[in-house]
Structures are given as C-alpha cells and as structure tokens.
Amino acid sequence: MDFTLMIFYVLFFIVIMYFLLIRPQKKREKKAAEMLSALKTGDKIVTIGGINGTIVVIRENDVVVESGIDKTKLEFRKDAIREVIHAELESDN
Image 1 (cartoon, rainbow, N blue to C red):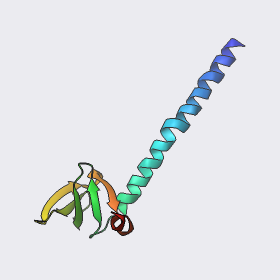
Image 2 (image 1 turned 90 degrees about the vertical axis):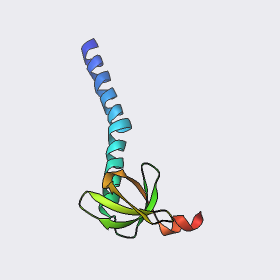
Image 3 (image 1 turned 120 degrees about the horizontal axis):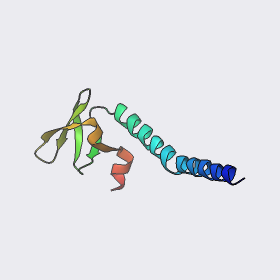
Image 4 (image 1 turned 30 degrees about the vertical axis):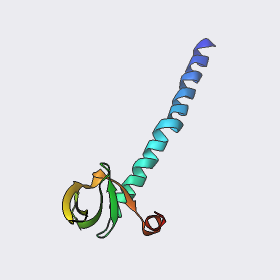
C-alpha cells in the first residue's frame, strides 16, 4: 500500500511539473520560432539588448538592422530579436 501511494505521488508531481514548466516553455518556443520565420524586410524590431530598428536585409541566420538617426546598420543573429513592433502598437505610443 505504501509503495503504490508513493508511486502515485511521484507520478502526480511529474504531471504537475509538466503542466507548470515544460508545456508553457514549449508554447513560448513555438511562438518565438513562428515570429522569427515571419520576419520580413521593413519590420520594426526590438532586440534582446533593447536596440530598436528596422530590418534592411534578412539572411538565413542573420539580419541587418538600421537604427538611429544616423541610419547605422547593425548585424544581429535572428535569435537576438525579442519582438516585432506592429504598426497599430506603434501608433499608440
């Protein structure tokens, strides 16, 4: 009886950990992968370092971003992009 109860508790905690940790992480990864695959030239983005800019060139794993008044061109890996700023969000600011 004690052994089966212990196995039940272990399985219960594994299921709880799956729904609290693993599943939400996979959803975030899937959403990020969809965002990166949908990037196009002209998109306004924010990097993980907080740099705002507009995508000028897209390569397989890299993007060239134009940023600032001087139109400085910076090259980033695609996975350094945190978010794409959509036009409707930009007009609210």
